[in-house]
Amino acid sequence: MNQQRTIIEMDEPKRGSPEIRQTQIIEAAMRCFQRKGYENTTIDDITAEYGLSKGSIYWYYSSKKDILIAVFDHMISELFEGYKSQVLSDISPKQKLINILRLFVEMLLESHEACRPFIVLMGVAYE
Image (cartoon, rainbow, N blue to C red; front, side, top):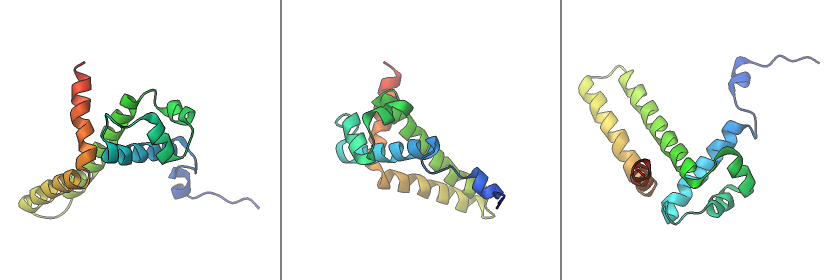
């Protein structure tokens, strides 16, 4: 029985694919950073949250700093996707601006502890 895969199925990452694992690590790190702060979070905390071995995390990220950069990238990507949907919408420029500001404020309110690593990242960037 030879079944052809649909285009949607071909675009979806497979269970356990690198994309899924990296997203899981990023989400686990975000939760840990929110709970404990970046400085107090260890790779062991992230592995416990994620449920994989330390080696699995190091397969994708060489350090906690690399995970922080991935978290930053993930959050900014989500924010810009929201911005893009507003810019492409058929609403007034004033309402677009209001919606974009609302998205930004909501991200800050929902993830205020996760945003703290951005400040740390800026400090690390200048080391």
